[in-house]
Amino acid sequence: MLTVSNDYKTAVNADSRRWIPKIEVYFDGINQPPVIFNGDDIIDCTFLEEATAESDNPLGSVSANEVTISFNNSTRAFTPTNILSPYYGKLKPNVLVKPYLGLELPDTTYEYIPLGVFRTGDWGSPSGTVEATVTCFDKLYEIGDKEVPMLPVKQNTTIGELFVLLFNALGITSYTVDESLNQVISIGWLSKGKVRDALQSLAVAGNCNVMADRYGAIRVQSNLSAGSSVVTFTDSNQIFSAENPQKYLDTYSVVKVNYKLPYLKAKDTILRVENVSIPNGGVTLQYEFSSGPIANVEKVKINGVTSTISQVDYGAWDISIQISNAGSAENVTVEVTGQAVASITSAYTIQDDTAVAQFGIKEIPIDNDLIQSEVVAQAYATGLLSYVKDPLVNFTISCRGNPAVEVCDVITIQDDTDKIGTVDVIPIRINLNYDGALDCTIEARKKVV
Image (cartoon, rainbow, N blue to C red; front, side, top):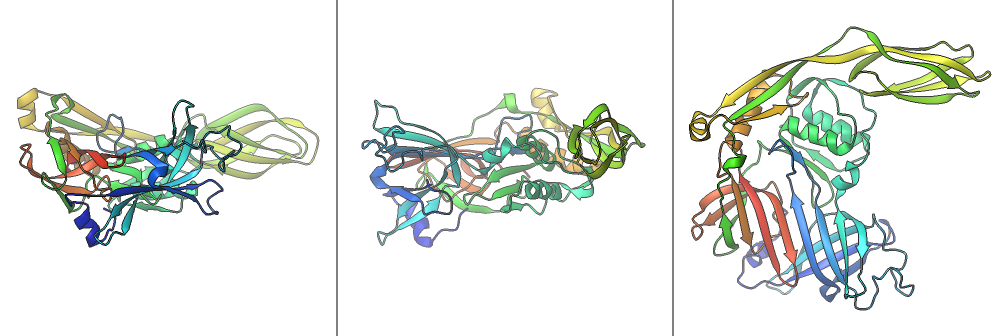
């Protein structure tokens, strides 16, 4: 939960509340002062923060947040063809946006709660309306489409250290990684392809969530270290209605976790390319290995007459070879020798007899190259089973809204009106909607124990 004043904590649960939005838009770049919109400038604002995504694993996941803002366009200032607009030529994608919601305190001042740090997508301003709308996305969305950098296989590392390796390679300086993500990885690597896929693989292996916080920093948080409740929502101060639905179709009685025992294969040819043209002066070649991941490159050789290798860089899946050539252009054969990683797969399976008696054998499998010991697999399976065996693990809460609450906080629900009782839950999706007033929908789950 964001740090707020005691006056805010009182005002957010008061019978009457007054909210106002404030939107900072950095049309002229991040190093210039923003244009600030507030009050009647904003028609509505919808904020989605989530720590879940569609995947086979209901826990470890990566998801980007977004905010959709509708501006008052009665003056046509947000019409992109209006050459008299102060924003003409500036209504572009990738503009930095920082939205806030301000709550009036007893002394009539406002305390502003940040909703995040975003970049704009496309702007829309239909001629038949007086609204201009833009949907903005956070840092995870921004980096997700990038290719995973060339990174080496790491030995004797941890899930947390692999997250740090990736963030540093991407040039991300503002991040936190849960210290509990210290399960040992004897041989670790990042999957090839897009950054979002590599993050998803790490999140599943670490049984954790990856999200951007309200200040634009990336946060990696374990599902098994949720902490204590930070706030209480009751049916007298926040909750309109709450539901704890039975979801037997999403319930499992057995968890099977495959774990891998990796080892280095014998030295072998991992890349061979014939008839490579090397021009006068040289060239930099980039290739994917014929197998992978590759832990060690032992030798790189070419059979050129005047060409020589000046530099080699390699990662788990590919290699960059810089070749100098002081003579005439020539064709060479490039051959790379090294050690690939292989593994032996084993499995740990756990079941809940009560759940089996209720709805039979229904198994959820987890298979990840970075789960590499029975001890880790056992802890993983036990934690996951406590979640997936319970058909009453999910909650949907319609409430007045408290923007200081973040996903992955622990909140206490006290709702006798809807027969929920008192229970600690973790929000996994928060949808705030401001249209002059504020309301909120929260999807939550019980704590994993």
